[in-house]
Amino acid sequence: MKICVVGNGYVGLSLAVLLAQKYEVVTLDISKDRVDSINNKRSPIKDTELENFLINKPLNLKSTVNKDEAYSNAEYIIIATPTNYDLKTGSFDTSAVEGVISDCIAINSRGLIVIKSTIPLGFTENMRNKFNKSEIIFSPEFLRESKALYDNLYPSRIVIGGQSKKALKFGEMLLECSFHSKKDTPLLIMDSKEAEAVKLFSNTFLALRVSFFNELDSFAEIQKLSSKKIIEGVSADPRIGNYYNNPSFGYGGYCLPKDTKQLLDNFNEIPNKIIRAVVESNKTRKDFITNSILNKQPDTVGVYRLIMKQGSDNFRESAVLDILDKLKTKKIKIILYEPFINEEYFNNIEVVSDLSDFISKSDLIIANRISDDLKFIQEKVYSRDIFREN
Image 1 (cartoon, helix red, strand yellow):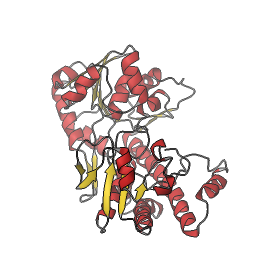
Image 2 (spheres, helix red, strand yellow):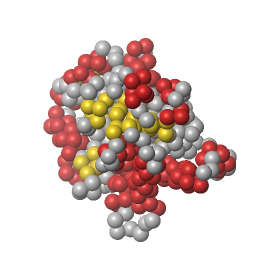
Image 3 (cartoon, helix red, strand yellow):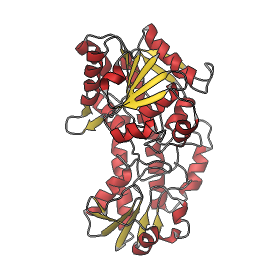
Image 4 (tube, helix red, strand yellow):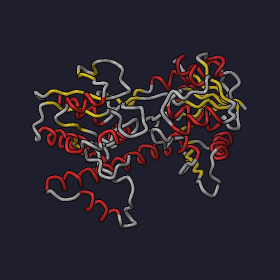
């Protein structure tokens, strides 16, 4: 059985590697560099399990930039292309996904199309109607950056937004290729719009949890109390749990910012307080962090890394970017240390590539997450990373 995966990002590539353990998988991407990297068994993204599997595991996997080669004779076409939330329109830009569906149907009309991209409520049903094709389903992913393959190998649940036999078979294939048994992982079958809601509400709840502990941390910092002791006391309650409770500069990354905004937009005419508060709380947290930095009156602020978490190479939608933009409006010098940036300047901010030089030039270093690079200069560092974990 041939499977096509569109998009070599962390969602698409992790799914491709998962399924290539047992099936023939061809990935399609517009980037020849990414295609060549995969064909040479190198991961184009930072992910320990992905890197290991590509080098050491026997995978029936190849990548291409040729649409005909990718789509032809594929039983399943998995779409994992990115969508972005447009603040002006209050909706996702789904043009990339729609383009893939159109191309796919033109070349291969019989394959089951599985949407893994983040999409608005009702999108899957709209695509079925638009393209007159019933075999389009939505299956949300629940993956962490830098842990995408691990989360596919050990899934918390598999959600399938489609009722056909072929849709059910896809869920069983994901489970079959994972390291979990059927009793360990629920396989949940539902309508496409219900599956779309699962994704948006899941990520909004995670954002709510992040926001809650960030506001606890803001309270503790103002009151000169120990955030660590309070969080440990709160989290010792098994109903709350000792996880996802490490304060930060705000939630960010691929999913949480856009999913919370999209869900709020769907509540436009539905009474709500919590969903709106989750979105607004993140803005408030970033303002609080910025003011806390300015209150220390540094001449030069060094921004240590734009990535949101250790082990990641992504800083898209990073909360650090918003902090940086807020600081730029003030009369304060800013320098940046980010090994993933090779240019001399990033958004008109000087990039200092040498860590020692960066440390010596900075009066105050801000870091969303602490690393061993900073352990000997903690007196210079401002961070809310209490537990040293993502």
